[in-house]
Image (cartoon, rainbow, N blue to C red):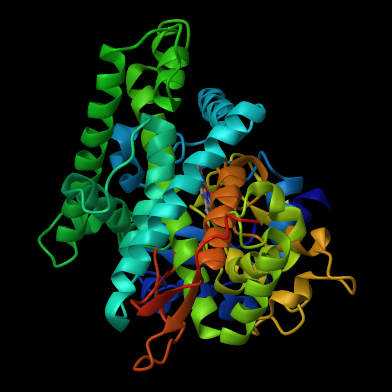
Length: 485
Ligand code: HEM
């Protein structure tokens, strides 16, 4: 009967025993996405854990995650009301706000603005491309300078500045020098933010640790502080834009957002703080992710010299040696694209998305999940799902090429790093353009060699993104452009 069926559906989801107060927090270890995948082997791809005071449903594997995020996109489009989310952009961040009519409007404005400055027409596409080429060429110069006298160095900072400058130029029409002290501090704050908020982090799941003196309390204080300082930096830049705002001339994304949100104040539910929060969302999301992608790409390139040689050949035959690679070359460099997709799949450097929550009761895989449940989406498990990937733990870019060397789009679509559904990353297209162009230019200009004293392990730190532990490389110049051709 219906009552029995409802009772069966509503019973507790499978999952491990949860300890009082902490639940399963200490079972997640250093790499929660790996722990989640192991638990899925025991309890199935949909199970429940308890983290501090929240019940969390963890979704694993390609089939279940796509079923949830695509077929039940609205039901899984929420965000939990974690205390830490309120610290971000004074609680006005689009990224960390629950699903609502206002959130939909906010997201639409952010999406339209990104498109207007990156792909709306051939002029904006060209301007965006030129900005990236400028950053990439300066990056090459700096990497070669740092490699002079046979030196090995950690490229993390330089890669971060290059990626951060692309998004800053879009948002503020301004880029920063690699040694700029103020910028260095902002980059450090974004880095710390990403290290503190990864799914399962203490700030999210045990907010009561804030209330009495204990070693973790300082993490909360620092997290609150770094959010305030980062947002103050953004507010300051947006305010400068307001002072010189001319509705006839939209200089950058800050102007565009001021033009929509500030100018409509009163007519919309969004306020001036939402204008600033939108810019903060873009800068925050666009900096650390793209630079981490570049960091892994260079590591894997130096780790696999035979693959690097093949990539050099592909780039040289598509581009030649008398000009730099451009976006138009993308279709002629399937192996370069394959290397990028394999890096995203293999490292899954955003292993778990930002936590979701259910907006209404929903059933996945015949298991009932009530409204307002916190949900973790284990992207790593999609990218290592043995049902869709052969030898998932082997790094093999060629898996994405068919017998004719053409990129297999069905397979590349199976890689999940930007999430899916209503909360899918809105910067995915600009991120892919940035990563391709910077990587292609680095490849065209340099050979990367790993420091012989290091084992070049794939060890990393867990957070919103997985970052490789520091590694050292050296870049060798591949030769001047041949202008005579
Ligand atoms: C959200 C990945 C670059 C803007 C996300 C999410 C992921 C992601 C996994 C969370 C989705 C979810 O919760 O289900 C990435 C990766 C990037 C990248 C891997 C680079 C390789 C960017 C860039 C921008 C951006 C360049 C902006 C300019 C955003 C925003 C959200 C988001 C605003 C929040 C969306 C929402 O909550 O509705 N991204 N991202 N991202 N990303 Fe990205």
